[in-house]
Image (tube, rainbow, N blue to C red):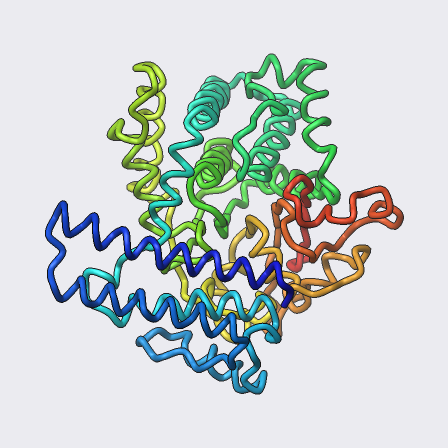
Length: 437
């Protein structure tokens, strides 16, 4: 583990500790945090401080205390398999997951007030509040797209494909709020030369693009009327979650699926990952008109209509949220069929599984230092083939590159890229493999 990654751990832990200190002061002043909860907060703060010191001293990783979670045993068994490494020598992906799971126990073993506390909720809300311009713009485009679908304006296959490509791009770049490269999602612009040029421009930094394979799959399933569920493994809260809701709703309204299952995290995870509270905050904040105070009445109405629309989708069961414990384990996803066969079976029954973001990509590819020309099929290991029961999954990953691992590039492509291209967030991959066929 390098100096940069170690510094990142420090920053995360220091932020968590500062949030606890500020919360104690704020809550005691406003709502009278009791003495028991205040003392518990100081204990959490002390544990965070100790952990920072242990990482700085390159101490041995210690077993995670049992908080009743089903994943603790696996974490500690793998720790023994790794022969209890030091913080700066352990495999990076395992160490990251280990740290977040360890920090979670500081809260889950505390008082009831702290057990459900999301130490990263404040930063997630601030980030989303700061993206109000992009949020309003995307919601307006989403409403335009819905109107086109519901009025049967987009009936020809070329326009339907153009909308699909645009939806993929919006979801792919969902951790950015600059929509300038994308079209307005109106049928007229999508069909225009300018619209085609905009879509091509948005693909310029997509180093692997299997979008056409996924389009062929979904359009065929729609024509054959053999639709099932699509499962969607989320990444970040805030604006990116909004893009994911837009994509999920598009897939439903366009007749490419009967239901979308959104998979989030059951605890605060990697600072910005989506949990149920984040989804509720977004939908209720939109529906009740409380998300943004500074926007105009028409914009607020557009958000309210969208919030009510998504709440209705959840109420009628066409969109569902799930938070399986597997997503907050250290396991690469190739182990899923072995360690969580029920979850694997659910995904194998789906028409498609969409994985969002860098962490999911790392877990799909074992966070391995593969040659960049390694095929996606090879890198995802067991997920690239059927299991012993003859079941397989279709895996689509939409990932903005923010870490070293990357696969699927054609020979010669990387030579023309900056040395740090996998870390800047300016490049992306859309990788797909069908293990059902």
